[in-house]
Length: 164
View 1 (cartoon, rainbow, N blue to C red):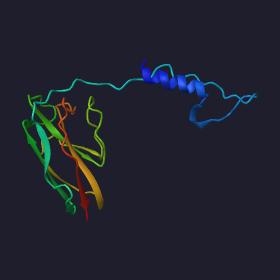
View 2 (view 1 turned 30 degrees about the vertical axis):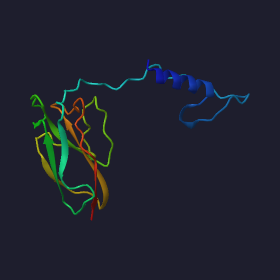
View 3 (view 1 turned 90 degrees about the horizontal axis):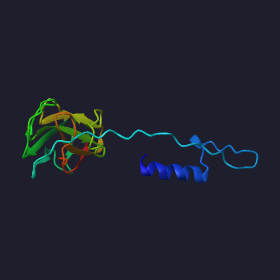
View 4 (view 1 turned 180 degrees about the vertical axis):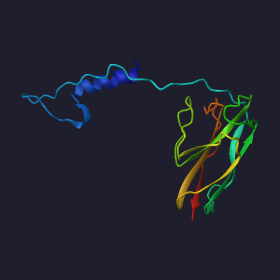
C-alpha cells in the first residue's frame, strides 16, 4: 500500500474523523472509529516515448500578453521533432495538445480530452478557437502517438492573452 495512504489512515483513526462530515458520537461522547478503505487504486502510469535533446514546442501566434478577438488564431511551432497524426508511431514525432486555463495533466497517462485539453491528433499546427472575453492562459504539450507526453515532456512556455 502507498505509504501516504497508510499515514493518512493512521491520522484518520487517531483523530476519530468520520466519513462525509458526520459528527455523530456514542453515549460517552467519543467519536466512532471508521475503518480505512481496504485498497486504493493507484493511477496507471504508461511508458513514455523519449524526446530528443533540444526539442521544443512553442507558440508562433498569439504573442504573450497580446489582446485578441474571436475567433482566436493560434499557430503552434516545433523544433527538433516532427508532427505526426495520433496513432502514427514515428520516431521523434508527436502531435500538439492545447491546454487552456489549466495545469499540466499527469505525465504518465494520455492527455485528457475536454474543453481545457484540446487535441490535434490530426497533425494540425494551427487552429481558430472561440474563448470567453477576458484573460486566458495557454500552453502547448506534445503527446506521442498514444497522446502520452514525452520524456522529458515537451511543454511550451505558458502565454497569457486577453480576449476582447
